[in-house]
Length: 159
Image (tube, rainbow, N blue to C red):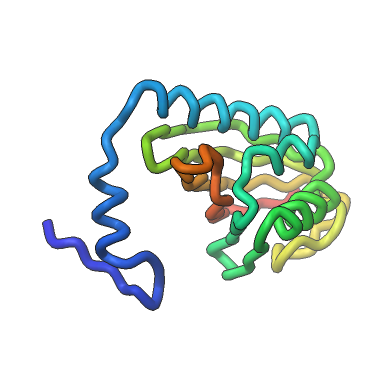
C-alpha cells in the first residue's frame, strides 16, 4: 500500500508513518482509556475544568465540516461554553469506540434541545435535534493528554 499525504492539508508522510508504526502497550492503553473516561465523565457533568485537565495546553478543537478551530485551553473552554449553551441537555449515545496508541476514535448519536445558534447548523431554537458525530482524540504520549478533538457531524434532524 502506498501512503499518500498532502503536507498542505495535514500531517507529513514521516509523521503519519511514525504514527502507523506505534505499537500497542497495555500500560499506555490503560492510560488513554482512563483519560477518555475522565473526559467523557467531565463532559456529561458539564465540568469544564475537568475537561481541560484532559488536554494539552496547545490543544486544538476542529469541526471538520466547517473548518472552525479553537486553539489552546482558552479556545477549548470557549468551544465547550458555546456547545453547552447551544445544547444544554446534550447526550452522546456511544455507538463505536477504538482506543489505540494514537488516541481514541468514537462514533456517537447525539440528541439535544437546540437552544441557540451554533456554527452553521440550521436554526431550530427550542426544538429537539439529533445527529451523528465522529470524534478523534489524538494522544500526546509525552504529555499523556489529548491534543484536542477532530469532530465531524452528519445526519442533522430537527423535530
